[in-house]
Image (cartoon, rainbow, N blue to C red; front, side):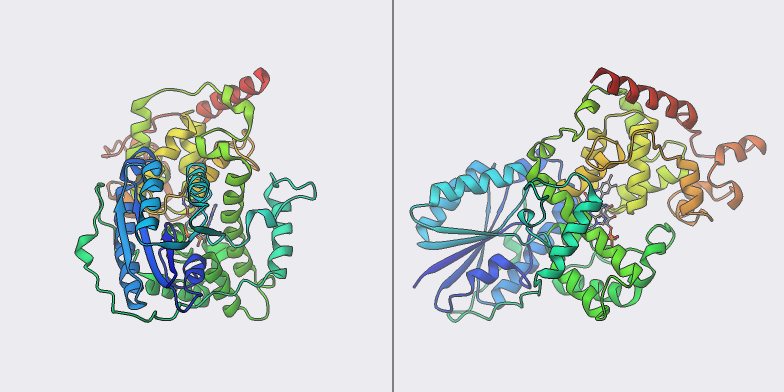
Length: 475
Ligand code: FAD
């Protein structure tokens, strides 16, 4: 009897999982699944303890789901990818695996690992990889000259053309395999990695919970998305990023649900189309990782920005990390991140801009800090977001576009409700002054248990413009 192995990574689901589905195609084959944890590498990549806990919870959930299908999930912990490859070769040998299926990961180390494995197994095991974590495979959306787009708008145009030509229906859960019942012991699974509890009300566990959240969003909220997505006091976005990052939900499921909610076409509904646009940004950053592998290694996309003279200040960095900058919108956002592991997209842009353009601190330090806290930490989207905010990336904000943290707060949290939620020490400050509590305190001779701004925005702005202009002239 042939034995097929599916190697699960960031695709912890049984619905619409291309590798799992392929492994289950042969009805006679015995199907095994494996997950390999590499905690030492997770540390090197600053994986957030909350994300590790979320991953572990979903590994257990998918183990239970696989057991219902009579597919045992084997778990192994390794030091690094080299070890993982060695262990997998032995595993294939021991279990007489004839076919190995996996879904592609696009980061440079992960794709090198897969190439190495395929090469080493080439004589005994047929390996097959699938583009499962994206809506469209990277090679499908290229310019006429075969190169990757560097600007999002033409990429999106080409993407949409392809999208409407491609059948992207979701694959159902595979049928239960014949054979003896698989028993599991959930308590056996644990990581040698620090874990931090996450809020299971905000991020309930399991594929079914993610699917429910997706359906609710598409049915009830997506119509208002275009406006609501930027308003910080309401939950106007899907909150699905942790599920998409770890593959508990696929982007095709998102598209499918959107199409079901708008059967007459997504393009005619602004909210639905804007949400699809975000899913396309997600693909864009993944496709970029393939075309420009150096992005995985912390290189800026725009070469001359390597000449920017960053300001080195542990104390300012720490104040930003802890939400003690004196700018309420920045501090409320950082406290939301530190407390929940999640931050609103508008706030990610504001806080990233503040670190880079107000404190002139190297964007890579911010990128790393986000990874160490985010429950949805994802190299492609995080790197893309940071390089966008730092004006170092492809199709990034131009360097002279600098968010004013006070006016951003006034625009997107006009009544200061979000700010008050995270900064209760500002409760005495009236609504009209909530974005500049220092001036209210000064005018009214009040003492607040809240810092005054650590930099003057206008002066910081000038310093940043000058640092970027100098770097550009040096190139
Ligand atoms: P929704 O608005 O509901 O969007 C739906 C999905 O589209 C998201 O779940 C996400 O998968 C994707 N998406 C939305 N916006 C973007 C975007 N700008 N770029 C890429 N994909 C997007 N997203 C991550 O998933 N992980 C990260 O580590 C991450 N780091 C970021 C860092 C910075 C500095 C910035 C500016 C953005 C970052 N983003 C990241 C993108 C975005 O902020 C989050 O995806 C979004 O806030 C998640 O909330 P949501 O699921 O409610 O999004």
